[in-house]
Length: 215
Image 1 (cartoon, rainbow, N blue to C red):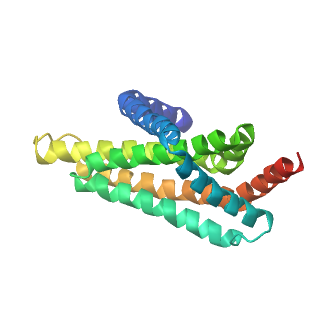
Image 2: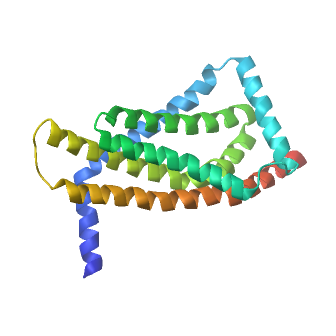
């Protein structure tokens, strides 16, 4: 009975907010496409410089000179935590609404640029490297960012309606409580993504790099 009730609540929530989630997903995908397009606009010298630093990184990885997995975990976790925390603050600030959308677009742009650059410079080898280094943790991080962005935008819009349009619907405290709960839950998913990035992705990358070097 409870399971069915939760399913109905989830279905109603998605039906009511599907347009918002669709908008956020499209915005993120536009950022990814824009990031990939930027790669083609770089000059030859810029690409060479970036590829040089990339080779330096791969060289350090092959020789085992990268930071400890625990350090990588902390770096990844706190980096994404800051991003999520900023989203949360912008959501309750009302005036931060456009900044939330810009941040998500930029996040998509970074992903698109990273994958696009690897593929542009290394072809299929770059694709496989991107697949094992960028995508595993982003399978968790991207949905988390999309959900938290959507929730932050919706909360901000409700605050705007209450403050400026004087529309009083659902009481604000339950909304704020669920708003906090969403971001607390997001922190657990961010920790899982950071663990993948720190403990699994480097192993996958080493395997791919060894395969490339042996060809």
